[in-house]
Amino acid sequence: KAGVTQTPRYLIKTRGQQVTLSCSPISGHRSVSWYQQTPGQGLQFLFEYFSETQRNKGNFPGRFSGRQFSNSRSEMNVSTLELGDSALYLCASSVGQGGDKNIQYFGAGTRLSVL
Amino acid sequence: GDSVTQMEGPVTLSEEAFLTINCTYTATGYPSLFWYVQYPGEGLQLLLKATKADDKGSNKGFEATYRKETTSFHLEKGSVQVSDSAVYFCALSGYNKLIFGAGTRLAVHP
Image (cartoon, rainbow over all chains, first blue to last red; front, side, top):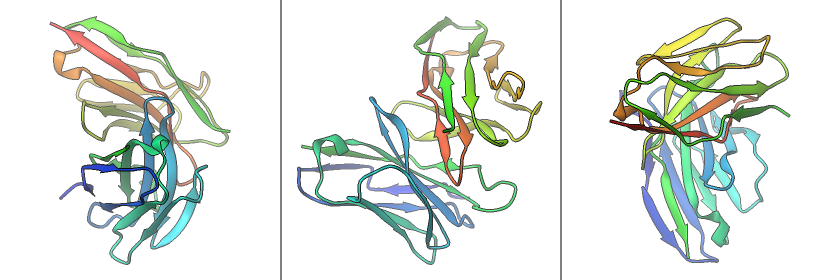
Protein backbone atom coordinates (compact mmCIF):
# COMPACT_ATOMS: atom_id res chain seq x y z
CA LYS A 1 0.00 0.00 0.00
CA ALA A 2 1.42 3.39 -0.96
CA GLY A 3 2.26 5.78 1.84
CA VAL A 4 1.39 9.42 2.29
CA THR A 5 2.56 11.48 -0.68
CA GLN A 6 3.33 15.17 -0.46
CA THR A 7 4.09 17.43 -3.39
CA PRO A 8 6.19 19.30 -4.09
CA ARG A 9 9.14 18.28 -1.90
CA TYR A 10 10.79 21.67 -2.10
CA LEU A 11 9.51 25.18 -2.74
CA ILE A 12 11.16 28.57 -2.83
CA LYS A 13 8.91 31.62 -2.66
CA THR A 14 9.31 35.31 -1.92
CA ARG A 15 7.57 37.36 0.73
CA GLY A 16 4.03 38.31 -0.14
CA GLN A 17 3.43 35.39 -2.50
CA GLN A 18 1.05 32.56 -1.80
CA VAL A 19 1.68 28.84 -1.95
CA THR A 20 -0.36 25.63 -2.16
CA LEU A 21 0.88 22.31 -0.86
CA SER A 22 -0.69 18.96 -1.69
CA CYS A 23 -1.12 15.74 0.22
CA SER A 24 -2.44 12.34 -0.89
CA PRO A 25 -3.26 10.08 2.07
CA ILE A 26 -2.90 6.34 2.37
CA SER A 27 -5.66 4.59 0.46
CA GLY A 28 -8.70 4.16 2.68
CA HIS A 29 -7.69 6.88 5.14
CA ARG A 30 -10.27 9.63 5.54
CA SER A 31 -8.43 11.96 7.91
CA VAL A 32 -5.61 14.30 6.93
CA SER A 33 -3.69 16.47 9.37
CA TRP A 34 -1.10 19.16 8.72
CA TYR A 35 1.85 20.15 10.92
CA GLN A 36 4.51 22.81 10.70
CA GLN A 37 8.03 21.91 11.82
CA THR A 38 10.62 24.57 12.60
CA PRO A 39 13.84 24.46 14.64
CA GLY A 40 12.51 27.04 17.08
CA GLN A 41 8.92 25.93 17.60
CA GLY A 42 9.18 22.22 16.88
CA LEU A 43 6.13 20.39 15.55
CA GLN A 44 2.95 22.44 15.65
CA PHE A 45 -0.51 21.32 14.61
CA LEU A 46 -2.17 23.34 11.85
CA PHE A 47 -5.50 21.61 11.12
CA GLU A 48 -7.23 18.30 10.60
CA TYR A 49 -9.83 17.28 8.05
CA PHE A 50 -12.13 14.28 8.01
CA SER A 51 -14.51 13.57 5.14
CA GLU A 52 -14.05 17.11 3.76
CA THR A 53 -14.85 18.77 7.12
CA GLN A 54 -12.34 20.58 9.30
CA ARG A 55 -12.60 19.01 12.74
CA ASN A 56 -9.81 20.81 14.52
CA LYS A 57 -7.61 23.84 13.99
CA GLY A 58 -4.38 24.95 15.63
CA ASN A 59 -3.34 28.41 16.67
CA PHE A 60 -2.20 29.84 13.34
CA PRO A 61 -3.27 33.05 11.59
CA GLY A 62 -5.99 33.04 8.96
CA ARG A 63 -3.33 33.17 6.22
CA PHE A 64 -3.08 29.42 6.71
CA SER A 65 -6.01 27.51 5.26
CA GLY A 66 -6.77 24.06 4.01
CA ARG A 67 -9.33 21.89 2.39
CA GLN A 68 -10.04 18.26 1.70
CA PHE A 69 -11.55 16.77 -1.42
CA SER A 70 -14.01 13.91 -1.79
CA ASN A 71 -11.16 11.50 -2.58
CA SER A 72 -9.54 12.49 0.78
CA ARG A 73 -6.67 14.33 -0.88
CA SER A 74 -5.90 17.59 0.90
CA GLU A 75 -4.31 20.92 0.14
CA MET A 76 -3.09 23.65 2.38
CA ASN A 77 -2.61 27.22 1.31
CA VAL A 78 -0.53 29.98 2.82
CA SER A 79 -1.23 33.48 1.57
CA THR A 80 0.92 36.59 1.90
CA LEU A 81 4.02 34.62 2.83
CA GLU A 82 6.31 35.87 5.58
CA LEU A 83 9.92 34.95 6.26
CA GLY A 84 8.80 33.11 9.39
CA ASP A 85 6.70 30.71 7.32
CA SER A 86 9.87 28.96 6.19
CA ALA A 87 9.48 25.45 7.54
CA LEU A 88 8.97 21.80 6.81
CA TYR A 89 5.24 21.17 6.35
CA LEU A 90 4.19 17.65 7.18
CA CYS A 91 0.98 15.92 6.25
CA ALA A 92 -0.30 12.87 8.10
CA SER A 93 -3.19 10.54 7.40
CA SER A 94 -5.21 8.20 9.57
CA VAL A 95 -8.42 6.21 9.36
CA GLY A 96 -10.00 9.04 11.34
CA GLN A 97 -12.42 7.03 13.43
CA GLY A 98 -12.59 3.92 15.54
CA GLY A 99 -9.86 2.40 17.64
CA ASP A 100 -7.01 3.36 15.31
CA LYS A 101 -8.11 6.91 14.68
CA ASN A 102 -5.18 8.40 16.57
CA ILE A 103 -2.49 6.53 14.64
CA GLN A 104 -1.10 8.97 12.12
CA TYR A 105 1.24 8.16 9.25
CA PHE A 106 3.38 10.94 7.88
CA GLY A 107 4.59 11.96 4.47
CA ALA A 108 8.13 13.10 3.71
CA GLY A 109 7.11 16.75 3.93
CA THR A 110 7.36 19.87 1.81
CA ARG A 111 10.30 22.13 2.60
CA LEU A 112 9.20 25.74 2.07
CA SER A 113 11.77 28.50 1.95
CA VAL A 114 10.55 32.12 1.92
CA LEU A 115 13.09 34.67 0.71
CA GLY B 1 -3.41 22.12 28.23
CA ASP B 2 -1.96 18.78 27.26
CA SER B 3 1.80 18.69 26.79
CA VAL B 4 4.81 16.41 26.36
CA THR B 5 8.27 16.91 27.85
CA GLN B 6 11.30 15.08 26.53
CA MET B 7 14.86 15.00 27.77
CA GLU B 8 17.06 17.42 25.91
CA GLY B 9 19.64 16.14 23.51
CA PRO B 10 21.81 15.44 21.90
CA VAL B 11 22.33 11.99 23.31
CA THR B 12 25.65 10.54 22.17
CA LEU B 13 26.31 6.82 22.58
CA SER B 14 28.72 4.20 21.37
CA GLU B 15 27.41 1.31 19.33
CA GLU B 16 25.86 -1.47 21.44
CA ALA B 17 25.24 0.87 24.39
CA PHE B 18 21.91 0.96 26.24
CA LEU B 19 19.54 3.77 25.31
CA THR B 20 16.96 5.57 27.42
CA ILE B 21 15.13 8.69 26.26
CA ASN B 22 12.82 10.09 28.91
CA CYS B 23 9.33 11.31 28.11
CA THR B 24 6.68 12.60 30.52
CA TYR B 25 3.28 13.98 29.69
CA THR B 26 0.45 16.07 31.08
CA ALA B 27 -3.01 15.24 29.84
CA THR B 28 -6.65 15.22 30.77
CA GLY B 29 -8.31 11.93 30.08
CA TYR B 30 -6.48 8.86 28.79
CA PRO B 31 -4.49 9.62 25.67
CA SER B 32 -2.67 7.19 23.43
CA LEU B 33 1.11 7.60 23.47
CA PHE B 34 3.56 7.32 20.59
CA TRP B 35 7.20 7.43 19.66
CA TYR B 36 8.10 8.68 16.20
CA VAL B 37 11.54 8.78 14.57
CA GLN B 38 12.80 11.25 11.99
CA TYR B 39 15.86 10.54 9.85
CA PRO B 40 17.64 13.43 8.11
CA GLY B 41 15.63 14.89 5.25
CA GLU B 42 12.61 12.69 5.91
CA GLY B 43 9.21 12.83 7.55
CA LEU B 44 8.19 11.10 10.76
CA GLN B 45 7.98 7.34 11.02
CA LEU B 46 5.83 5.70 13.67
CA LEU B 47 8.14 3.66 15.86
CA LEU B 48 5.75 2.30 18.48
CA LYS B 49 2.54 3.06 20.34
CA ALA B 50 0.58 2.27 23.50
CA THR B 51 -3.11 2.96 23.94
CA LYS B 52 -3.72 2.37 27.65
CA ALA B 53 -1.98 2.20 31.00
CA ASP B 54 0.60 -0.59 31.40
CA ASP B 55 0.64 -1.29 27.66
CA LYS B 56 4.12 -1.92 26.28
CA GLY B 57 4.83 -0.84 22.72
CA SER B 58 7.75 -2.43 20.91
CA ASN B 59 9.33 -2.39 17.48
CA LYS B 60 12.83 -2.98 16.02
CA GLY B 61 14.28 -3.58 19.49
CA PHE B 62 12.81 -0.37 20.95
CA GLU B 63 10.35 -0.54 23.84
CA ALA B 64 8.27 1.88 25.89
CA THR B 65 5.72 1.26 28.65
CA TYR B 66 2.73 3.50 29.33
CA ARG B 67 3.06 4.41 33.04
CA LYS B 68 -0.03 6.27 34.23
CA GLU B 69 1.18 6.59 37.82
CA THR B 70 4.31 8.48 36.74
CA THR B 71 2.80 9.93 33.53
CA SER B 72 5.78 8.62 31.59
CA PHE B 73 6.55 6.77 28.37
CA HIS B 74 10.33 6.34 28.30
CA LEU B 75 11.94 4.88 25.18
CA GLU B 76 14.55 2.14 25.66
CA LYS B 77 16.75 -0.05 23.51
CA GLY B 78 19.20 -2.59 24.77
CA SER B 79 21.88 -2.21 22.10
CA VAL B 80 21.91 0.74 19.71
CA GLN B 81 23.37 0.74 16.23
CA VAL B 82 24.83 3.52 14.12
CA SER B 83 21.71 3.29 11.95
CA ASP B 84 19.58 4.36 14.96
CA SER B 85 21.03 7.88 14.74
CA ALA B 86 18.01 10.15 14.26
CA VAL B 87 15.66 12.49 16.11
CA TYR B 88 13.07 10.82 18.32
CA PHE B 89 9.73 12.43 19.18
CA CYS B 90 7.36 11.45 21.95
CA ALA B 91 3.71 12.33 21.29
CA LEU B 92 0.25 11.99 22.78
CA SER B 93 -3.14 11.99 21.13
CA GLY B 94 -5.22 15.11 21.63
CA TYR B 95 -8.56 15.98 20.07
CA ASN B 96 -8.04 14.82 16.47
CA LYS B 97 -4.37 15.78 16.61
CA LEU B 98 -1.00 14.75 18.00
CA ILE B 99 0.91 16.82 20.55
CA PHE B 100 4.66 16.39 20.28
CA GLY B 101 7.62 16.84 22.53
CA ALA B 102 10.57 18.91 21.36
CA GLY B 103 12.46 15.87 20.06
CA THR B 104 15.71 14.25 21.19
CA ARG B 105 18.60 13.87 18.80
CA LEU B 106 20.49 10.59 19.12
CA ALA B 107 23.98 10.14 17.68
CA VAL B 108 25.52 6.67 17.77
CA HIS B 109 29.22 6.29 17.05
CA PRO B 110 30.99 3.10 15.97
